[in-house]
Image (cartoon, rainbow, N blue to C red; front, side, top):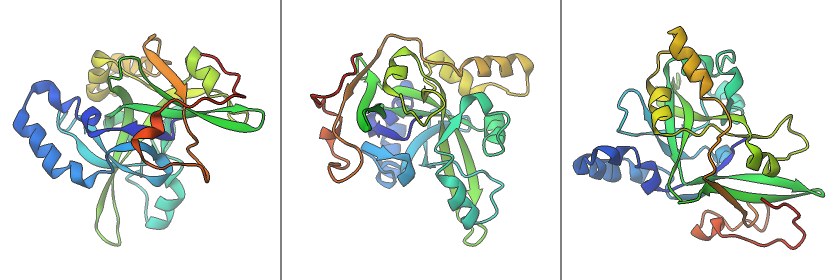
Length: 257
């Protein structure tokens, strides 16, 4: 799965910078960035941080969204709170079927740019967190879904998102070995051409629908790297600090990548 991420403002603005519109970038930095939870050296999805996402509405201008998708049909805050922790990730193979995600899959797909993500490796009853990132440290583009939900009590509109996951590739299968999980998973990563398709394809057109489904697969590139880091849970957790991604050596850890 993907419950822990690293996201800097620089990485989250990668798409916005493609058009070299300096005025637009400055506006984003001044008007949006202060209201996000960036920099996120380590953020858990269960804390529902506010990050930047890109939608088809304005493809190169991000919006702020809480992590954890709230479907538009949720009636009240009580149901929202019950669902919220179960929509941090969206299982790619069942997007078209699950009530929480099927509407968003048809018409509200988004892109989320991350520096990297964390996953836990299990060994002898202990867990060891790993940080996964690109070799050249360029941002990862992750497929997402988004939604707008109106709180009927306050009238407030919440923009939220979920990260889409798929089966793990060979490296991630070694890391994500949770004995309680049915299978190893990883986020759906996209190259530039795939990102455009994910954002703009018409899911009602059979050919484009098939092309979308084909994007939900393990990352096949050889450009991912990973290393163990300090604990992300419990009393030894250092918090949201830059050093959280630094490599840590565990004498007893047997995993080699």
